[in-house]
Amino acid sequence: MTDVVVGVLALVIGLLLCFRGSGAMRVLLALWGAFIGFGLGAVLVAALADQGYLATAAGWIAAIVLAVVFAALAYFFFAVAIVLAFASMGFVLGQTIASALGVSQPWLLVVVGLVGGIVLGLLAIATNLPELVLIVVSALAGAGVAVAGLLLLINGLDLNTLADTELRIGDQPLWYLGQLVLAVVGIVVQLRYARRRRLGSVRQSWAAAGAV
Image (cartoon, rainbow, N blue to C red; front, top):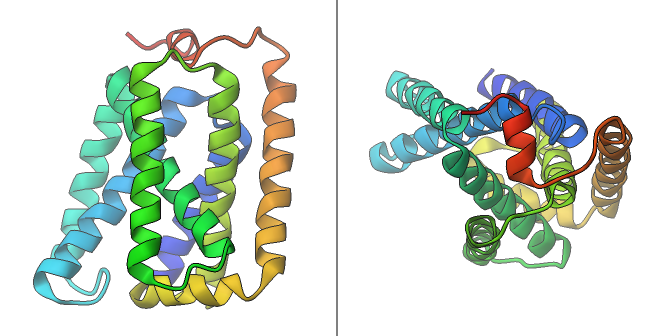
């Protein structure tokens, strides 16, 4: 049941991020923040209590609380939203690329994901990123999360053995091909939507969404 709930959330948020990552940036980054906070709270409790992912009431409570906190921070503060979004999406992309290249050690997948997150997070802080970067990154990361959600729903992914399952996916290139196709379609859809307005910087897009 837990796999189904998390799978549906991942699939929905991943698709929204993939196809509307820049068009509805403020709301979607808040949803992305909630998704990251939910996962972080569940993982922390699972690690501290030596229990399964969302196996206890404490895990669910921590996941929901952190989801609300991260969503609020991402919605109201531009810097928090951008750094959180790019760092977390960089983590997803880093792990996806490493797994696609045949990395077999779970700890190395985590390290590569962290490096990707740090690089994109620092880039978001140091530069005035063009909106095109957000479109590409959100489409790629959204496609990765959506595919992971789909795999959870069809029992191709196990929350308790996430790293091991990612390695099995690495032996099935069709999943990566599907993920790439989904990302490309997401980029095209976002670019077509963006033609209705002039592409600017990520900060300008945030201001246009009504941020203060």
